Amino acid sequence: MKQVIDRFLRSLTIERNASDLTVKSYREDLNSFLDYCELRLGQIPEIPSVTAAQLRGFVAYLHECQYARSTIARRLACLRSLFKFCVREQIIDANPAKALRTPRTGRKLPKFLSTEEVVRLLEAPPANTAAGLRDRAMLETMYSAGVRVSELVGLNDEDWDRDAGVLRVRGKGKKERIALVGRHAAAALERWLEARGPAEGGRAAVPMFVNQRGGRLTSRSVGRLLEKHLRTAGLEGKVSPHTLRHSFATHLLDGGADLRAVQDLLGHKSLTTTQIYTHVSARRLREAYEKAHPHAAGGL
Image (cartoon, rainbow, N blue to C red; front, side, top):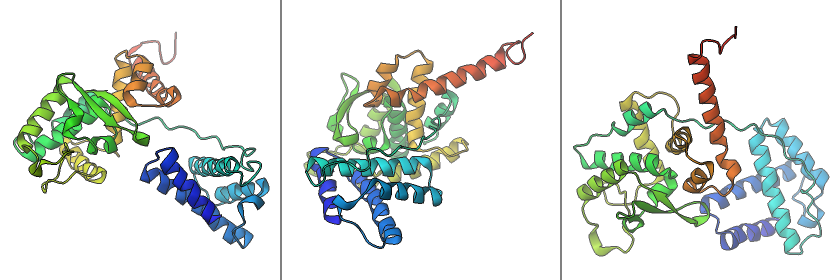
């Protein structure tokens, strides 16, 4: 089975252009099934001998261990993909995971900042140092363009079309899309790049955001910088770089943007993924109504 899993993971990279992080997550989920087999079955079975009953036992085991439903659903989806690959490669005739029911998962509403909180955060980095100008440019870009932190740190100078006001972004699965840059973000980028100066050594791909040594910033570094500026802005609560992406989408919909336009800007493959933000906007509308309308709470 381990050899088949290795083949399956290689196919994710080659055929589906999956990122290293995605392949790592798949491997961890599949290793959890292998651990279960050794613990409860006493051995790791060959792929053709795996039954639906054994897979149900694995799901029951995950429930016993009190894993979150979202984790169980993800691991089951991973197994489905593995056995689907095995059917395609003619290793087995039928997918034993196909009939298993996925546990329902309640989707949490994404956390977002108010427009006032966003302004406080964007103004937190100092405007009189190169590092402060860099951080302002990063925060403005994440909020203005709605990019993921992985997309942000992957940007190169050549990805910014100043005349068109757009960024070429490499998203999940290394798919490219165009992200719009507002005037505030564009001005912040101009100030940062002027402070940074031209890259040394004539590199072909010049990282847009670099550390003090001139190396490309990492997603973890951006997270630490964000925590620092959140403290400066006096914003409490768990806020991640992705919160700015959530705020971007929520504020667009609050402002009347079309849902499909927001889907394109976020780079979502499915409209269903984008629709979670309509629930956020609806909740905010309800809260505003109950707060402002004299008869909202109890009627006449």
